Image (cartoon, rainbow, N blue to C red):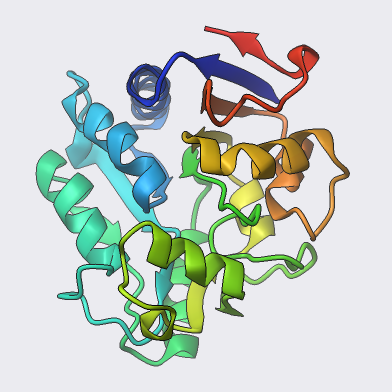
Length: 250
């Protein structure tokens, strides 16, 4: 795992976007198309904005998969991750082939349908973040490190739900759904490359726990250390608690 720390979230986003675009171009050059997984949330906003501005990416040859979504949230809701991806990535790039998780449909059916499409071929690159509780996608601690299911119905813990309130996606804790659809940990790890984007000081404790502590379901994103091709992009705020030997400053 390679960990880089940048001066601020803007330079972090630009660097991550360039690496993501390179991974997409290389996949298209190699086999004519690219399959990607995109994360959502506050931490990904600058990164996705930078990625959509990178030139010479043939987005018409990109197939997009959705990482997670709340159960019971309509697509028109300001906090809908489907809405987020449509507005911040799909509509800006012209991606034509995408698989969104419908939080209003039958959850088991959605997991099966999108899961079948996902496992049809390898994923070239996954974009992920890390939650304040160390979650990876919506796999809150203790995360399931064993299941081979592509997507899961998960219960959101209180720390995760409070994060959504504090980031402004919901007004009160009672508004935040208690369940969600999430790509499983093992499925994320099947991606050929993983780009992990984690800005902001509020993520510093989780970053240290996941990257300097034990690899454990109690720190779900710690499992990224078992993947052979991961780059973690931090800013100085999110990386402030890491020991120097764990980082290469950019």
